[in-house]
Image (cartoon, rainbow, N blue to C red; front, side, top):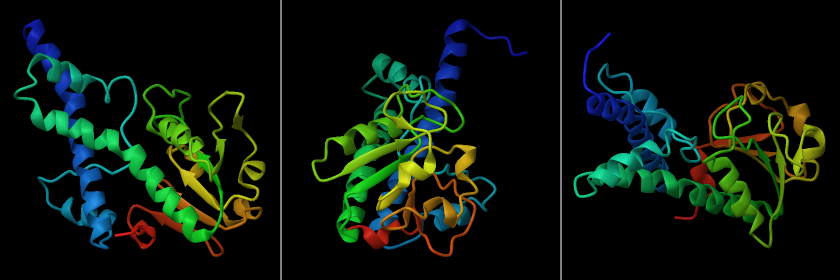
Length: 229
């Protein structure tokens, strides 16, 4: 038990989530840099984290939830002049859905396809919460693209437009875009994607741990092959 006053306790709690948000922003900015330089960002982070005083978080499609993506704004609102790093972190993380959509469009163009199946709409794995979810934002942005057909698959979300049959969801798709790290996605196999037009996965959460023989698997570490420089 640590004795303190209410203001210090409140700032401490806000800073817990703000630290994580800014750390993820660093990882996301590094992802953009490495993709422009044809460097595997996941390898860079893994190697940098070998240093005992370095702990770079994993990049992703953005930061969501009703705490992590919100708490930094309380600090910014109280002292915007000095909260510049915190504000920049929010801007970087808020830019990731558009970055994922732009990358997805380049993949689809390269494949001459049009259907994208989104795996996961929640802000984190194994929950049904889509509040402040970058995955849901990406789904909505893709739906605004006239040349892309979007299907959503999420075993945890009960909405009318969400598919709960994976085989049906991926039928005729050119790309599976993984946006949430549900446990179900860790051990996917080739057979899950038999009905796809093009068997390509873009895993923005680096959640898949299995290997494939007939499926082309991409994550932030190697997706630069599709990105126009």
